[in-house]
Image 1 (tube, rainbow, N blue to C red):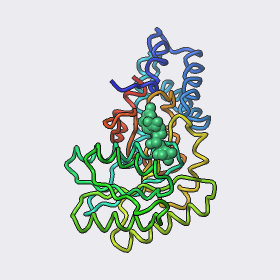
Image 2: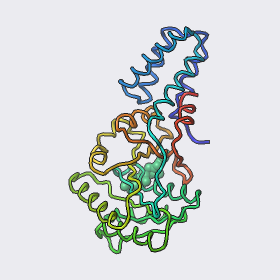
Image 3: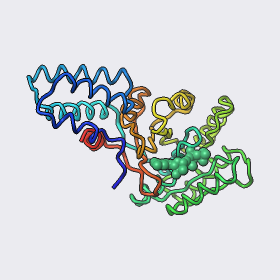
Image 4: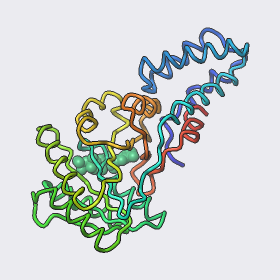
Length: 290
Ligand SMILES: Nc1nc2c(ncn2[C@@H]2O[C@H](COP(=O)(O)OP(=O)(O)OP(=O)(O)O)[C@@H](O)[C@H]2O)c(=O)[nH]1
């Protein structure tokens, strides 16, 4: 079973099995929400809302509070639509994000995920500067049964690789073309310029269906600042939260969606090729609260 250390269920169990809701219930709830990286604002809103609900329904039963928390989280998580838009042929997906967040692994898992829906996939290694990065991506993609477009030589213009990837997808009628991109941030302007160019050359051939920004749950909201440039400049249409397993930061999922206003579309919960799932607010809220 997937590692669900991000779930609050075991940490909240003591609170929900008490005979009655009391003042420590609220303190404990607040502590746990903060620990889970919901952030101070959302935590305060949740606690205030639940206190009002408990008062309104005149309940002292912690089981009611548990249900109310689950429903409140589900409602807030469901405010954004997690559906991947992959109906174009080919559906072009650009994957962006800071280095080390799990971008390469995510692309491999995503190719496998799509293969499960019988979609043919071509992956373009447009992060052309590190040969090892290209090979790592190729290994993952091949494991997923996807075709790979490699740079012709190290350091080739990333936009050229993106172009060739989409061209191949069109010519050979692939369902999905996934384009990996560089994540180095030493020079933010250079990177954003490169991404712009990649987008422009792709759009000469096909619309871009999704721009997915990969975020690492272990760094949580602290890591969000690093991704700001992508959110501002890259036309991000969906978020992928990786490394949720072992993160203890389940609240990050709600916080990041509300802070950015961009829907979460995929969750990564492990290093295996099968450890990527779609995002379902109902199931996530149920697993988060227990
Ligand atoms: N536990 C866990 N580890 C993950 C997950 N996704 C990726 N990783 C690990 O995170 C590390 C970095 O992953 P990469 O896919 O290489 O990250 P990247 O963003 O492509 O990094 P660069 O290749 O340096 O750009 C690897 O050790 C992965 O196994 C996940 O969902 N859970």
